[in-house]
Length: 140
Image 1 (cartoon, helix red, strand yellow):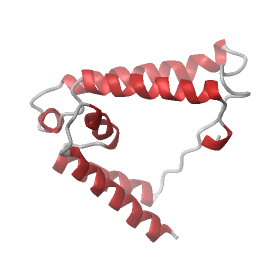
Image 2 (cartoon, rainbow, N blue to C red):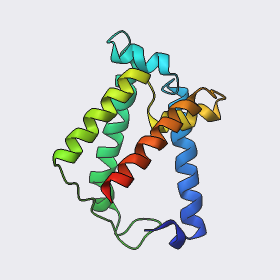
Image 3 (cartoon, rainbow, N blue to C red):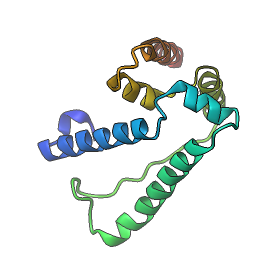
């Protein structure tokens, strides 16, 4: 569904989900590159609990929602999300992992970090945007 076709309730639900996501990232300290880097160096496993909890909730909801509801609350049917695993997926995941490991910055937490006043994350977000632009130009 494109953003142009969203109704007001759908847009408000998206906004509320984004606020909840950003608050959760901030509350769990995932917006601090130092915390992320200490996790990646196997010094602090708190973020593993955060990520594991998030994955468990998503798996549970994705499995149960279609069984418990005739249709989603704000759409006409449940959508399948096809995923394709190929060489580009593998290379992209590896590049993302290297960038994450070097900087301790992931796009979602970086945007949430801006909301907490960590303006140094603008540099990382500029790099993320530039990388996405280069890949988009390459893919044409």
